[in-house]
Image (tube, rainbow over all chains, first blue to last red):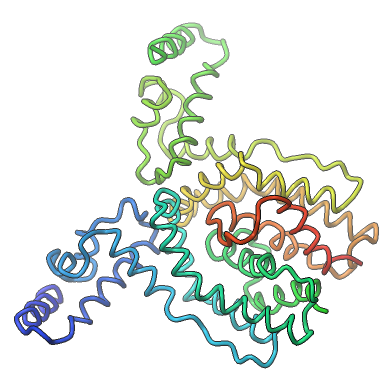
Length: 204
Length: 204
């Protein structure tokens, strides 16, 4: 069984100091957290036992790497977000479409559900909220810089409210990812339609 | 204790068929659900026992009115949303500001947290999602009709994508209510700033 082989690998590794961690078990554990959350498990109800079972590892393997559930959730958020995207930098419209399409694709919709399941936890714990915000800030700043560049090169209005514009691009995307808030807005061409609508008011 | 008096009232009422329900106990129970959810309790972890204790009634009083937790959550959502607002109908801008300010006020921020705590439940249960959508649709339609009227009287562009515009107004508001997604966007004047930015692209 997978449980045994991954645990064995972890044990072997523990016996060989200086070797890298058991990355395969770590990845399976993080993936298990994300799958449980996206299946609608609340962060509250999530147990280290359930994560271990889902990942096919022993509970000790989970605790060896993460001392508690909060630490594990933090790593799961960071993994889920991944490194921020890098815009081409040639056209404000193209860069924004790339960023929004990246938030709205199927993979991220899956992750939107994960975020949704973390929301009660985020609201309960100021520490989790701070962690979530700092996990998000690098990607937020990518969008900010696209808009700043657009203002600087005259594509966007000089008096544009950049922070509000970021929210106008991300908020609708988040509402659809988490709640499918308006089922009458089609997924097909979503990023282009939203960016064009926002730019209609933001263009110089 | 409150527990005793409300239970007594419910019992008396049960003995007098044809009399109205114990509305006071019902309201206390719904309020208890909303308070527990807004304090960060997940719908998953919420128990009928905890609701009864918080409301100061016996568990039997809760079960007399709601057969299970799902039925109770549905009623809590409906109560939380309340009747949809009625716009004055004189200015598209004023009507939209009223609707957005109503979504973003402190009372609704409290309820944004409640909705956030229901999100995992909504994602897990297609039935809960359908119920949530139908609870939301009357208010969504109020906003839709404001935009339809704006297009009809020439204030808004004839080719305006009305469903997308609804999402552009509500999505940022929801993202702030639930996640305080962009802490750099001030609460003060939020509705006016958002509506003006959307109208800049939507005006005829």
